[in-house]
Amino acid sequence: MENRNSMTDTSKRKKLSDNVKSSIFLSPAWILLLVFFLTPMVLTIIFSFTNLALTGAQAQNLRFIGFDNFIKMFNDVNLYNSIAKTLIFVLFSAILGQCFLGFLIAFLMKGKNATFRRIIGIAVIAAWVTPEVVVAFSWVAFLGDSGTLNSIITSISDIEAIAFLFEYPMVSVVVANIWRGTAFSMMAFQTALDDIPVEVEEAAIMDGATRWKIVWNITIPMVKGTITTNLMLVTLQTLGVFTLIYTMTGGGPGNDTMTLPVYMYQQAFVSYQLGYGTAISLIILTIGAIFSILYMKFLKVKV
Amino acid sequence: MKIGKTEKFVHHAILSFMAILFILPLLWMLVASVDTSAIQSLKIPEALTLDNYKSVLEDPSIIRSFVVGLFLSGGQSIIVVFISVLAAYPLSRYKANYKKPFLYTILFLTSLPMTAVIVPVFQLFLLLNFVDSLWAVMLFLSGTSLPYAIWMMKNFMDSVPVELEESAWIDGASVWQGIQKVVSPLMVPGIFTVLIFTYTGSWGNFFVPYILIQSPDKMPASVTIFQFFGNYGLVNYGQLAAFSVLYSAPIVLLYYLSQRYMSKGFSFGGASKG
Image 1 (cartoon, rainbow over the protein chains, first blue to last red):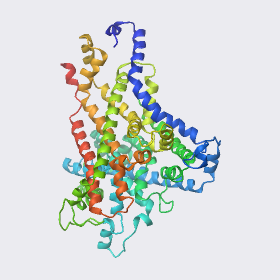
Image 2: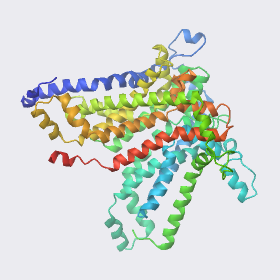
Image 3: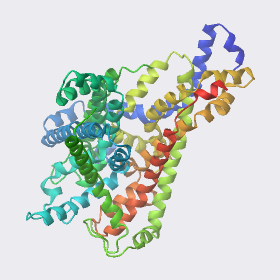
Image 4: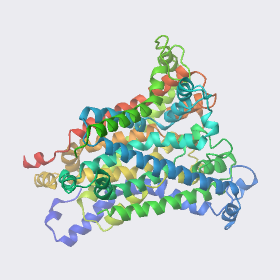
């Protein structure tokens, strides 16, 4: 236990003792982070240069194979497919989907009756709170051959039931992910929109600005910060989505929804090529790290 | 902003339509779980029943998966709260040399996609003979949720006035006693928020236990529900829906509680005035 007298000592000694005390308090956190977070990140880099495999002869003798995994990547058509699928998935479900829809809902909700806002909010947030596996089940059922959506379609039109998950697999997982994630953006934009002073918009109306002009020239610029940070966060979250896609389509049919995390899983745990799987995770990690740093730069956090 | 009547109607119509789209897939789950003859589509039940819930709750392997999930997520939450309170204290109170780099590291790790490190983690678990150990998985999950927890906890602790602690020190309390008797009680809302946040994140985590656990009897509910219905196709919709409702219920309840907690606000201001 530290002696309280150090409070009155010279500031130099106080700083030294603060450093010692900090180390004691921070050590459990450091240990866990080092073993289970930072070590795996370093291992990702090391393993991606090895022939690491789960079974077979390669499992016995681990060798460094230089850039072989990365050369293999350059010639891997499936990897290019996965990168393309990941970009489509992130672009449509995170950027165009969650961010835009979240903003739209928050914007339309502004200034509405409190009870009405609550009901809409609960509906959107319920989807967000629901566990990912349950979201997948609900959507597989909803989009199924004899699911709710097809019942509605066949009852109001002559169109025959559509096998959404087979005919439009990417659209299906994108929509399910938008459905699941929009609440996050909605809540972020609600806070930001509520912070805009009423006077600013009123003054613009007095000056005879049209509604569209107000939204474009005043509202959007004033929540620009939130738009940027929200885009970064949602992109990072969407980049790592595995469970939803894996449980809905398993990456299929064919390779149609094989995003990078699903492909990484396939290579590492189905084909047992851990080394190659790690090389794929290095791509995800690198993109994630770049976005993470950009996010910190934009946020300009004071620590 | 004043808007016209027609525009107001259009806004309400769009929002209501969206709310229906958001609620429809979940509504199916709720209705099918009490329907005697549930099908894939949403329909009005012919007769109401609790048999689906009964058959789910009577399955010992499902009950065990709930207990495992409770153990895994509960243990993880307690570890995370304890370590993050310890870590947040010096980050909030002292001027240590490596405070800045530590906080930047934490913030950087907060937003990294954890999916990406699972392959090396699996290899690490193989190496250390940790595969299939619930304790090791609990520690790994704790490590992954620490960055966020420390960040949140530090912000909560920043709002507890230092003066309160100082007066306890003058009365002869040690740093540790100060944390226990003065800081922790005022941190209760923060501690609960981190606890609930960690618990819900862990309870819904499918990926980590799916990879790192191999024995079926050690699988938490998130994996069991997938193996039960994912592998055999969606056959018994009533039971699937009942399992889903039971599995989601704790998280929905905790979220609701956390909202009530947070809306009470963090008015520490009054305490320091005495």
